[in-house]
Length: 188
Image (cartoon, rainbow, N blue to C red; front, side, top):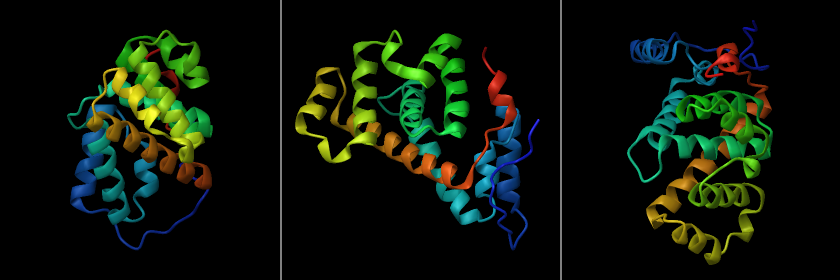
């Protein structure tokens, strides 16, 4: 098992606050681990809070997208960007939330061959286009989402989740962030 979190050696000038330690304890209790991405950000608690606040809002708050759909966006975007960390962590989440190990693997490899609903396919097609060719997003792309049953608020959320994971993928790539070993064997 690897203990490497990132290739960067960034010193922290402070120890973790009680609030952060309590958050890490909650992660350990609910997930059975503290995700390495949180450990990576812990050198600066302001950055860690900004990351976790945005992540928790996008991925866990009530909205028109299911948690599975949000995880599917994370995986589809991360597949385009070939982000090892996010493909491993969020592929695991797709397996867990869907109860289908094959779906998790298909999402990681090529969502286009997965047995998806028209709604899910439209959502992922949009997220991938936004990742690959953002300047080419047109009203017809938004209309395709509306036609698939998404509200304009849902479109905002699809775009926000895709954008967040594009940012996260780039930080993970730049720092050679490694996923927790536990993700590899979950929900298989």
